[in-house]
Image 1: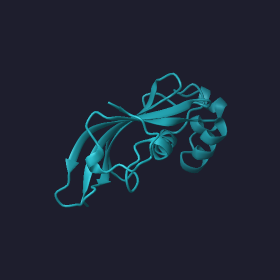
Image 2 (image 1 turned 135 degrees about the vertical axis):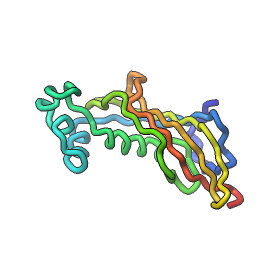
Image 3 (image 1 turned 90 degrees about the vertical axis):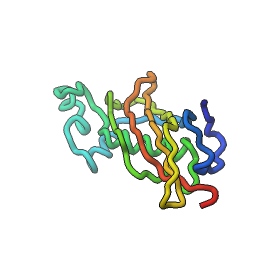
Length: 155
């Protein structure tokens, strides 16, 4: 079941159903953004220098995986499931980068509700979501399974 996220009505734990899919908008990645993020947080040659990157397993400039994660977070905040109180992670079960993000790529994210679990000790519930970030060719560039803390209406 696909949920359009044009409506930004906040969603509570009770509003989620296993199998729902939320789709974000898109954003593009350019060389200056890749290099700026890398210079501050992941200063390795394949993220900073096109010539040096040619000699690595990436065979060209590639965004840091953590830059991809940050871009995914931006996509989710701007257009993913509008979770009441914000996107609050309680941990990741999985984080993979099956292919690199390159300058000029346009990314989008799809999040599928995998599991719902009420908390016995907290007023929130846990929503497990698999978020796949795709490039413009519909190739996955990141797959993450997150456990999100979502408030209940009654909480």
